[in-house]
Image 1 (spheres, rainbow, N blue to C red):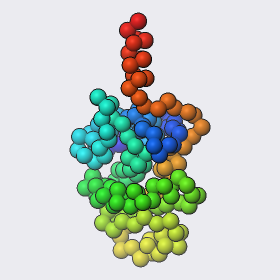
Image 2 (image 1 turned 60 degrees about the vertical axis):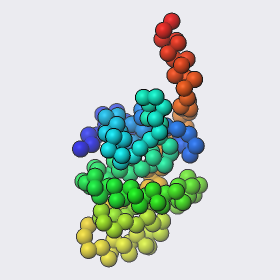
Image 3 (image 1 turned 180 degrees about the vertical axis):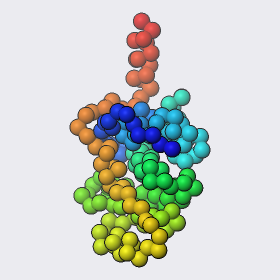
Image 4 (image 1 turned 120 degrees about the vertical axis):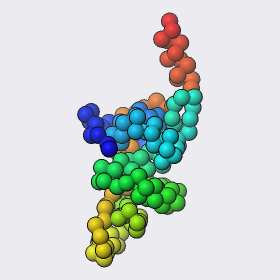
Length: 169
């Protein structure tokens, strides 16, 4: 189960082409570093590896924040995997929309039926016609968590090498 982070989440600036470290993802999502490692081992979200470091793309960070939100709402990992498959199919087309428009994109699901909607009227129709409780996660809000004014240095092996040399001296 996810434990609430004791530290307030810090915002990390969004760049769809930027890579995020596990520490960045932890700060953005509130998911522990161990949980990120476990999700990687179980192939829930599989980032690239650079040596021993996990490197996440913006799409993966948004997925992790959605997963964390669904886990907090009590979803099983099996249901989350179904939602993830749906998001991976849809997000490739719609991720650009998340960052380029002011429209809110909502994930509405009961674990079986999954909808990705930007129309408030359509969301209300889905909720009205649902036969069981539905959960709503604003994917746009999860993506907006990635935006801030604090600049971060890009992930790179040159930085790591410089730090290692500096520590050795």
